[in-house]
Length: 356
Image (cartoon, rainbow, N blue to C red; front, side, top):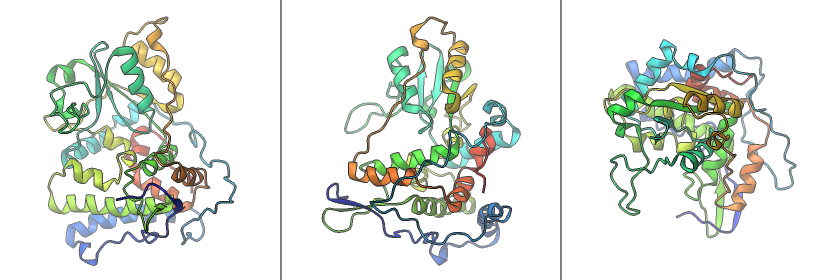
């Protein structure tokens, strides 16, 4: 069990820096080797095409007395060029979503809103809690509404509403919408919430009352290694994954890519439809457009833009470390990792990859 009291410190290199810890026997042969090697070449190609100088080799460490520098990323490095619904519906991105729905068997989180004949497709760390709170307060809709899910064995309540429980009527006649976020800023927000959770997957306790907190460098290295295993295994076996294995591959749901979250499989195995995509970077403007689209008229108090929701760190001492990590300068290694981990988000949602 994880200690929840005592001193919190940045971790030692628990994950060995850039070493993913993959056993030698994992490296596949034949077609599988080509697939996995291709994933590695994505990372190498990003570096080769940029004048970045030598790659850093050590993990960053922040001392208790270090002053936190200003965040490196603004709201978005450059304004997105396209309406996200345009890039989202390109043939390549439609194929990507269909493949993800088929091979990952992902059951996406949704909120069905009967009053609006609409469905919100949830993307964590993209104003999702603000949106869900507004939908529950103003339109009496919640992702715990009973759509026929099995009840939780302990709480007795239905699990989250998900894409596999959507009826034919909802799929054919409701408006499906979501909001997306620049993957650069979303990643650091994901890191903060995932590591601040009491059940943090990689927060290893060593000794009585001592708690260790993984750094951003360690998390990015671990994610790349684990996801290479996951998708490599799928390619080799040619089998569908299951939800638990998928969540383990991404370490925590808050790290999951936005395109994965938008590729939740319906009961026939196809990805959930989408009719409206707004951006967190233009939240107020896009929320008003959504309300217009859904017929919520000017002057209706339910049109108000959802307020910002902050998450307190479950363990305050860890939160201090996480906050220093979040505002630390963004390294070249992190930029390369984010560009690779969230390649589909950049391509299909119209955001610019980080400049290296």
